Image (tube, rainbow, N blue to C red; front, side):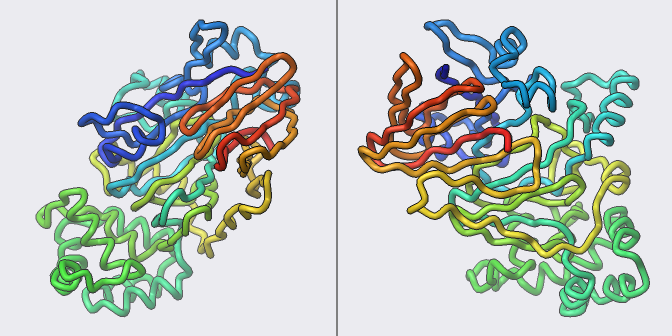
Length: 398
């Protein structure tokens, strides 16, 4: 069995005004649309439509847990284990990371015991789950992802005279200790380090002479996009010199594991993650920044980013490879008249990204077009027929 599924918008300040409304056939108004959620997270559960009746997806699953499938219930209980999103990143997101499952359970219990309301702005743990996540770029996409090698960081710092004292400091420190020093720096120190870099590159930035591969570009871009005052610099700006700056082409992706610091900078993407909203922030945001918690759980290993290759358009059904046990994402390409027979081993969420398809299972048949989504019960055999060339994505368990 399958049912239409209506998502929920999130209106965070870093989003845009047109991309998500156009994707999901929403009225274009003056609202900011940052994310579109498809899942059962209590913060914004999707709406399942069955026999012309609307159900909160989380409530529906609680009432009929068999729709998840036996494997899913054994591993994750009576909850949908993943959350599917579409993001429109117009301004940079915060420097952030996500906890392990154990860290989330401890942090959630601690904040509950402290009496911090779940909707309190000064709360880091919104639930007791971890949040590994993957993303697939829907456009050219730029992000920060994990620490560069120590040698690469030193090379970057030594290339900028005002940052050379930082390089000399790093020569004699572990990366984790060095990062803690940087993130707790005073305004006086931040000005000494960053202001000369900003001043030296402003003209080149305004004349579009700075490469997007250059971290100086993103420092000035973040200053302008986020309206950061030179009198109140953000320590997160230094992360552009410490983290890997990653450029993903449309269709490529990346996986973010627990503890890995990252920040989305620009572009649109598909995100699939464990069903959690736990975010520990470390700068470049007006939201709650919890530096002590960040330093406690951050993973400071040196990382070479592993890019997930784009799906081959000639391959009808393709599952992206990640280490996650909480979710998997498949890409389904179709032509007009093409057919594909599939089986949902666990509950699936199907979202048509482009074109139009027809789905059939037993005595059910529906036409689904761009921006429309379905919830497919576990143990459903179904057939996809292309009506108009395009592709869909399917969130599921591995």
